[in-house]
Length: 551
Image (cartoon, rainbow, N blue to C red):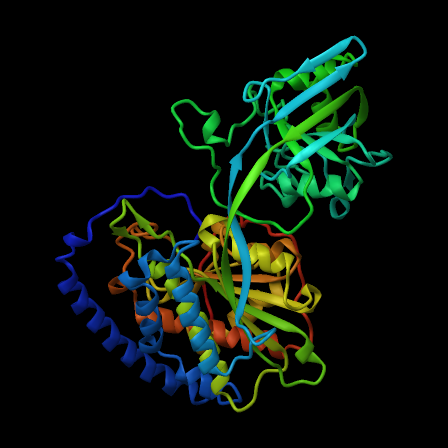
């Protein structure tokens, strides 16, 4: 799971405790066998076309795949790395053995590029007034946006509020404006950012607050350039935020962190500091704080042209590497519904190696979820009858870097997104209480969550929704952004998260098996349902409650 955590490295040479861990693993596998026998006995009364696959799911099978993916030889499956490619090849071979079809071109791989962006030269920003010209200083007055394209633009400047067009919320900063061929200036974030009465999702930011979304919206309105400025009411920093190491004191680099090389069109764009914002507004006798308060209070646009021409020059260069998602298709059995999809996914990357020798194996995060997806593919493939809708199994690269793989897939889907009825995500399913599972997304689609609870009648786990606190931190969120109903299965945090101690020996095979069975039955129900599940904006629950289905 993509999470900021304290890292506490340890040397592989300090692993004497592993003998005891092997004993724990043996005990866990024995318990797994006992649970499996009990489960099969309880499931005999509920036979159906799903039965063979359901009974085949075992902790032993799941642990086998987890141990392969989280072995030291995989060196933490960093994005990008040769070991990530090795893991992808393993997953593809298992998909092939399961009978899944490659979705396109006889390949199970959906390739995409990640890149390191370097600050080049020159980078300039200048304003032309009636009485003269102002040449802004790099770092002090402005910095290029890391999502900017390279090039030069020149034109009139228009202030566009927050730069948001959100018809679903009845809000549009561009209402009545013609910005074609012009540069736009926008506040960062969104209206009522820290107000529970936010017209959007309260204090939780939506995608509309993201710089890339503001840039794409500017492109949709015909703008040729973008200037962002921190909204002054809540962000008082004088200088623009600096992502460029070469502009930082004591830094010798000039590269921003790894990014997804987006396929969308980009604008030339910069981020300016407060002095630039104040100077531009003062040309009209306006105060940016007052303007922001007006927008926030009325939720109406307060956009206007500025009496100035602007020239922006941005010079960036990128070093790119290819990585891939691994995708396999199980066609549906219904002549009509097979054209619709249920996506079952997990990220297969982790954070790699630190200090050259310390391996972060990422057994729970997320070899466990990947093992779940592989096992689910095998289980569904064993049934003589497939469910009515098709199932698309995807393991994503680059989740730890920023949901790269799922972001790429949802921007470049192999099947139309409007044919995807739901996405089920498995991330960290092998730790903590064997009887508990956390499922996020109940507010997004009550029908989906009801299917989880119904499926749980055969599994008997204690379900809670505490994973809602991590709703934006794993790959289902990319599908949610595209208005697709989602479920997120998780076993919550533990002391080994994003540490080199997240090793296979600590996984609980039976917990993995129980969660995987629950996902299997849920996915079957979704794929068989005559009605598509509904979609609603995510709402964090006021209080978490644990529930357990009737046995």
